[in-house]
Length: 328
Image (cartoon, rainbow, N blue to C red; front, side, top):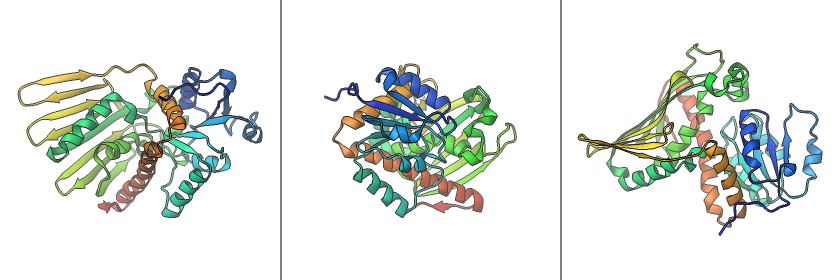
C-alpha cells in the first residue's frame, strides 16, 4: 500500500508566481513541513536558482510558471529521481518527433516521473462517465462539450494582466481550457480530424482568442462538437452524450453530477468533492507516482498531455487555413 505522506526530509519546490502557485502553496502544507517548501519565480530576484539546485532531498517540483517557460526551466533544473507536476498545457508549442524522443530520453536517464496538470481526470464523476463510455462506445450518436466561462471571475485581481489574457505568455481560451481537449483524449480517444474556428469577441480586454468552436471527427459515424469561451458570464461546463437508443447522459462539471435521461424520465447522480479538490488531488497523485513502480500508470497520461499540444497545433492550422485538418 502506498502512503501519501512524503518522507520527513523530502522537499518541494513550487515554480511560478500567480493564483495557481498560491493554491499549490496552501494545499502543500498538508503534506510537507512548511520549512521544506521552496519557491522560485524569475520575477523574484531574491531566490537564487543555483542555491536551489544544491538542496538535498528536493524530490518534488511543481512547474506552475507560464507555459512559454516550462520546458526551458525543466531542462535547466533537472533533479535526478524527482517527481514533477507540469501545469497545463505543458508548453506553448507542440513537440516534434525529435523533441519528444529527447524529452523521454532525458526523463528516463534521470529517473524522473511526471504528473500532467490535467486534473479533471481525477474527478470521480469523470471516472464514472468513462466507465459508461467504455461499455457503450459503439452506441454513441452525438457528443457535445460546452464550456462557457468568464475570465474576470477567474482572475479577480486584474484579468487584463494575467497570463490568460496575453498571447505572448501562451494565453487564450484554447490553451487555458485545454482541459477539455485532454478529456476528449481520455474519454473518447484520439480524433481522426479537426475543423476549427476561433476569434476574439472584443468583449474583454485581451489580445488572444476568447471563443473557439471545434469539430472533431472521431470516426466515420461520429463527430464531437467542442465549444470553448471565457467571455460568457453565464458559466457552463458540460459533456453531453446522446446514444442511439434514445438515451442521454450529461456530465455537469460545475455541479459535479451525472444527469441520465430517456424520453420518459431524468435521474441525477451527485458527487461530493471538497473545496480545492483538484489541487489537493494533484499533490496526492504526485506523491503516489513518486512511490509507484508502475511506469505505465503515468507515462500514458504524459503522452496524452503531449498529444494535446499536437492537437492544439492542428486546431490553429485549421483556423488559419479555414479547412479540415487530419491528425496523424
